[in-house]
Amino acid sequence: MIDTVALNPDRHVPGARRHPRAADTLHAEWLKFWSVRSTGWSTAMLFVLGAGLTTLVCATSAAWLASGEADESPASFITWGLFFAQITALALGTLIVTSEYGTGMIRATLSATPRRGAVLAAKAAVLTGTLLVAGVVTAFAGYLGGNWFLDREGIGIALSDDGVLRSMLGSGLYLAGLGLFAMAIGLLVRHTAAALSIGLALVFVVGNMAFLLPGTWGEWVAKLLPGNAGSGVATPVSFNPELLAPWTGFAVFTAEVAALLLAGWLVFRHRDA
Image (spheres, rainbow, N blue to C red):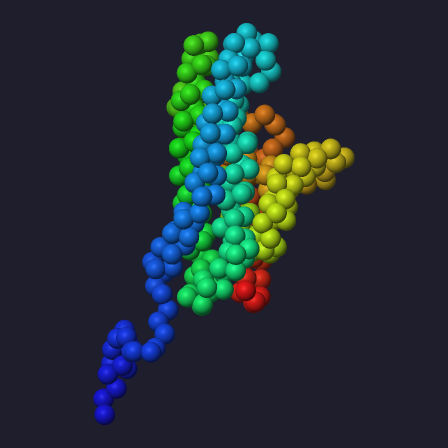
């Protein structure tokens, strides 16, 4: 007898279990990500903090910058609000993993899609796409709003100026990287408050305190910490001249995120849901 299933392996056999396609898994993760209110609110806050605070600080600092009394370049302020938008990127990256552990939905997810690598890849793709687009849109909105005030004082920044377009794209890249960084911490910790606290502490507290460490080794420790290494790509002129060059720092940041994601995937692959 001819085995029709062997001749046509794509044919569905009643009662047999089929693994969902990559597109199905991606669609499922997209629906889960956007079906909770926290995603919409966090994305909105990212825009408000990033674009709104950039516009506000440029409005209040334009005259001071134009007076010549400031030691900072006007280009340092054109993505200023992204410093605070980092918080929402970390929150979204944490919640895309830990919210399912908190509700127990992770068991249903892994029952529907047993291939854990596919689940993790879909989550990463949804998170990266969302934060990349939101970061770039927010950076351009902040630039347009803030630069209007700088132009009025005769110190406007053109998109063709050195580092400006790079910082617009870099804002999206950096926020997407931060989201993946937080997602990896979430995979390791599996608790929203703990994972978010660790991410915020590493980026905001440890990253700043590390510059107080003595000697050359302390300087390099500070430069290589994730928030310090990655953030330079998101501003035309950094407030901190001790940071690595923008793309060099981002390459270091990418390697750190990749290593943490690998650790998170290994734990996610072998640990019970």
